[in-house]
Image 1 (spheres, rainbow, N blue to C red):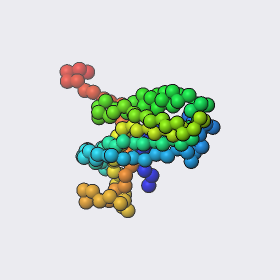
Image 2 (image 1 turned 135 degrees about the vertical axis):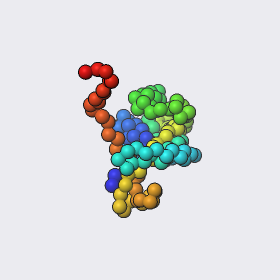
Image 3 (image 1 turned 90 degrees about the horizontal axis):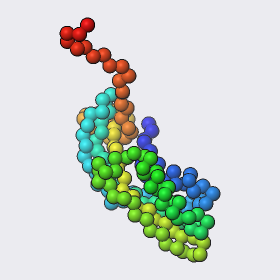
Image 4 (image 1 turned 30 degrees about the horizontal axis):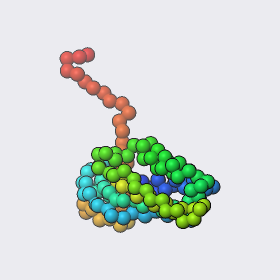
Amino acid sequence: MSQTITQLQQLTNFLHSSLKGAIHANNIDAWQERGTLIIHNQDRGQDGYAVAKWKHTAVIAIENFPHRRVNPYNLLAMVSAFLIDSEWPRDEYGLDDPEIDIDVVSKDNATVLIDVQLIDDIELIPADNGPVFFNGENYYVSLAPISIAEDVNVDIKGQP
């Protein structure tokens, strides 16, 4: 049973891919801290439920960032562009703009810390051996499938 990829994983993967060749994979790390669990009970249909939203500060640490070879403003633009392109509802949930610290370690390298507030959906799908017991059944965490109508028939009274 697969879990969804978090927004932090998406952003970290994007930065790693964008900086490929400039930084090594083991020089980028990411974690979540200072989180708030927002209870959000919504039936998503097809036995799926949205039970919460996880609002947190995501931290991405980049060590040995070659600030003379890669313009740090490129990194700032990458973070900004990704957040804009993602179309996540940042304003709707009052998510702060990213904070970035660049600590020059040597004439060629810096350590970059990116703090960005993110919010992930926590949704449940029924599963016989799922680890989450909810509403008398077992579930696993994943995005609930949503069926979207492809055709709609509308009857208007008095119209043939």
